[in-house]
Image 1 (cartoon, helix red, strand yellow):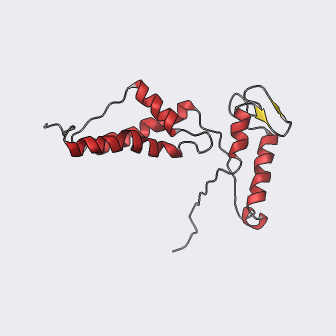
Image 2 (cartoon, rainbow, N blue to C red):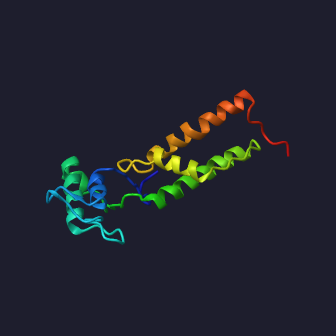
Image 3 (cartoon, rainbow, N blue to C red):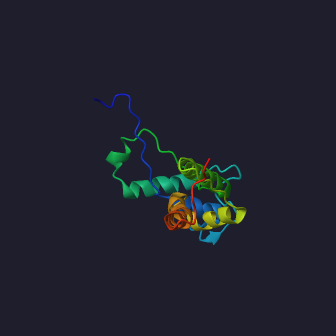
Length: 156
């Protein structure tokens, strides 16, 4: 085995707070609040200054010898509500598929979706807490109801 035709993707949240602050109109470099979107354009493009701050932060955390071996650094914008809602839908579809094997269906209200968004999204960590929120708010209570016999598989 060799790594001749391999792509390695590494992720990090280093510098993500700069993007979050820029999207919320806070610019610590100039010590003031800027208009909403401060250093992130309406299209979500990062300014060169913001890119430089993120690159500088990478250099503070990783040795130049390591960074020199990386072909490209891709900086992602912070996730917004539409992206989080799409991730919620994808996670719920995965859960629905698992439940369908047991002949159980689940439907969520708009309020439930909003609760998942509130409990499962953290601007600092993105969508990572979402899986835990779905587990805590939906899967765990559903498992207890299954064990107690309150929810029974459909007899189709």
